[in-house]
Length: 126
Image 1 (cartoon, rainbow, N blue to C red):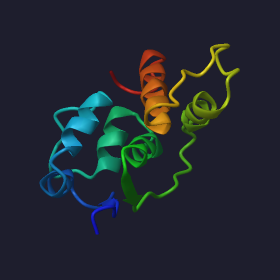
Image 2 (cartoon, rainbow, N blue to C red; image 1 turned 30 degrees about the vertical axis):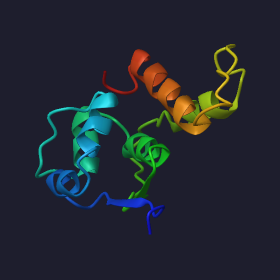
Image 3 (cartoon, rainbow, N blue to C red; image 1 turned 60 degrees about the vertical axis):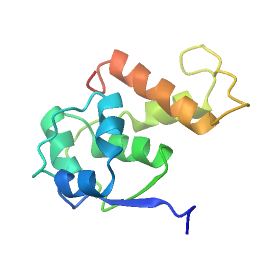
Image 4 (cartoon, rainbow, N blue to C red; image 1 turned 135 degrees about the vertical axis):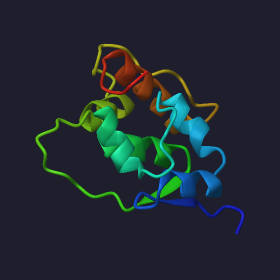
């Protein structure tokens, strides 16, 4: 089926995922995640960078992937996911209105804005 989502299994090594989805390295690079060790899984890459895996998973889902294998952790890390969700759905987060994206891909536009803000605030690598 042409409209079927691409499934990313986070338990697979990055090299396997890159071979299956050639656009994936570019998507990660847009998030500031480059030079990924092909032997590591995306959760391992995220841990090395000090980034919560759920942030990467959320961005991949916003790009049209179906992310599987995400395991919740209880390591005391304060995930920026609540901030990201607030940026996406709450106009009062930073006192700025959300951009008008009625003509094209509102979820992706909001996700890009949230990723940039998280990078500016040091919650994601640049």
